[in-house]
Image (cartoon, rainbow, N blue to C red; front, side):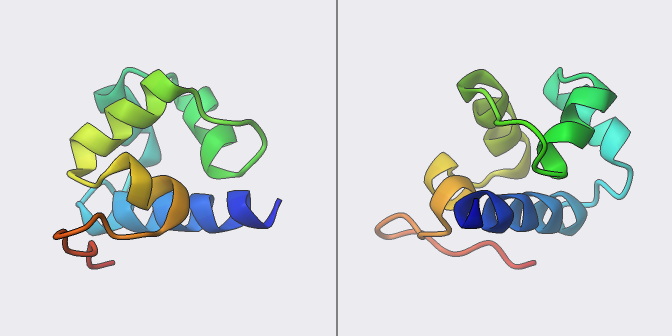
Length: 80
């Protein structure tokens, strides 16, 4: 559960840092329903791999950073 808590914090922080202040618009851009995204961001459900890949593509973050908080080798940590 601790890992999920940090994941949702990173997800929320990077959503806002990339200018998506409305989670529903962010969800729409990722092809996720607003309700499903709300559940993901609140930590109520686990995110699917396709959803994770879409969110990584939109934010420009690596999947590894979103999931673990680790910066990929040679990468730069997102600023939140």
